[in-house]
Length: 229
Image 1 (cartoon, rainbow, N blue to C red):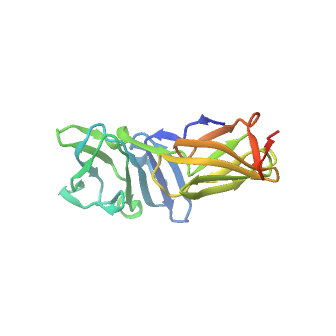
Image 2: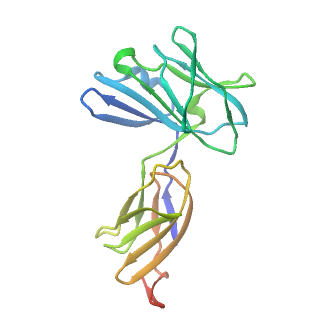
Image 3: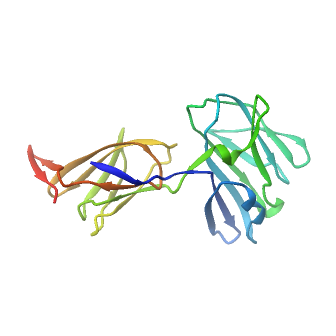
């Protein structure tokens, strides 16, 4: 048995700022005002997250910036057209309310300053800040507590998607694949006692923290049961 202690799904967009020195500053933003205060030496800004449409329909992305950014929607570039100086509108995109859509906006702050505004426009005329309808994982890893020390932990979906070694405290951190959350995975433990299935998890997001409950779960090896201590 395994239960979630911390939910990695969080409201907003992940903001990554790359400096001229190659350092990367990352944080989750729930509004875009921090973009007006980019650090000195900023080279590039990247905003990424998952759009959760409030209703199904056709949307466009509206951006205010000194120059047109690059937008990737799902697995394709999203064309932008200039409305007037500093204002841009994307090509229409169809989205359903029961799905999440990956978006990435990249922009050179070194040459053109910060992005000032990003909105989503519904076909019924409603305009809202994009951060009102986006989610991001807290990180690209999940953490498991309460494991047998020095055991191999495996996350499976179709094949192995991630694995890690628990430390002497019984803690393991697994890096998730670059797949759009939420994920569904099954967790197994392997050590000298055998193999133990902790069960399957749904709605998995990077940043999740889970507690393994091992008191009544047996390891299996060669047809025998071995209870975890």
